[in-house]
Length: 348
Image (cartoon, rainbow, N blue to C red; front, top):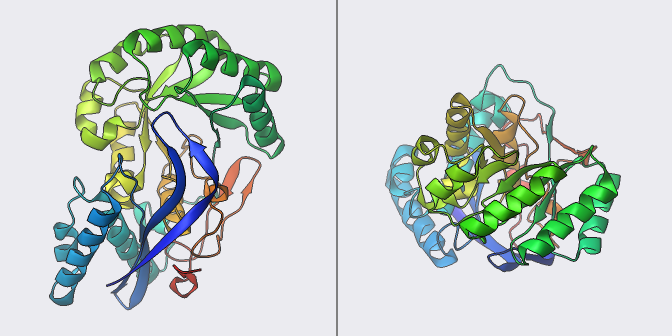
């Protein structure tokens, strides 16, 4: 097991209701298994995962276990609750090697009978004035996207409703709109926002309330705007979210959930209970983006996912084998993740 660090600047700062992200730092993980070298990525995002230092310590400890132990021992040493990004890095490398050894792309390793060449994706638009937001959505639509997610929650509810209204007026009814509040609203603010946004045909509001308020999210459902939970999956088990009837949609981030395998399992569990899974990145480098893409590709009829985030980075650790056209991302059909470990250069 080999671990190398990297740091990538964003092409422009990404403002959310929680913070402003300016760079992404993490680790490339390589692991030899079944005659193949698999590659993974651990890119922690504090507040969602462990810190960068804790991620490094977790990977260092796992590398020590790997000297004399097998892959099961390594996985057991990486707790998904305490070091999810570190576990994601190793688990992805292991899955990449397994899928290569079996001669299939990773999504088919999850679902052998599945054939998928493209996954629908949404564009993400950050905070801005109504005109700035509408212009950004118009540009995304011109680029082929038919689903856009707007960041809300940093401004007043009045301002955010005005932003959504301006976008809807400018792009018409054929574009699917979503909004992400990152837990910024109180119950009263959220109820007010959803009541006023409902006539604007918004598919769902992502994390309108703080992460621990499952009862509040459950109460918001059923008024014409779906409720999606994201941050709530950081500290709460998915079972508790589903048992609380708190969500119409689950936002599944493999980096936060401890690996692609965990994310795929949770997507299937959500589907069984009538909740839609949407797979997204945490603004990762190309290896983790590919892992998330394969998870989404393994889910039949998946809704548009938040995977088209490569342009958020000013540089990357390897060439991206995917393309985004007409609002969908191509899925590599070569074995494993679809990337050659020799092309992954953390210092690139």
